Length: 105
Image (cartoon, rainbow, N blue to C red; front, side, top):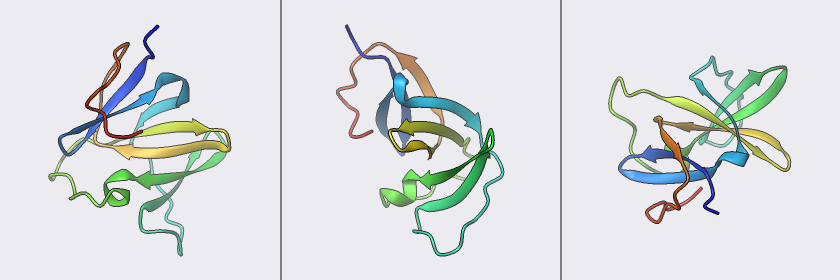
């Protein structure tokens, strides 16, 4: 059985995350900046009463910034330690194909 993936892009690369790890996909909410965090940590959001860190994958992977006006969303990914957000340019599709071109996550 093929694993279902949520596929997103950063620059021109495709990445996939198993749907079982994705808690939600949402429009960019208000992000509260937390001083003293790593450069890739944009801050935290309040997700149904839980404070969840927001990681900018472009900064984390040392990629150039997106073009002006580019749509951005938050993908909340659940790890064993709890939910963690990953900021992406957008969700392309959720499908049942293995992603050979996906580089990571």
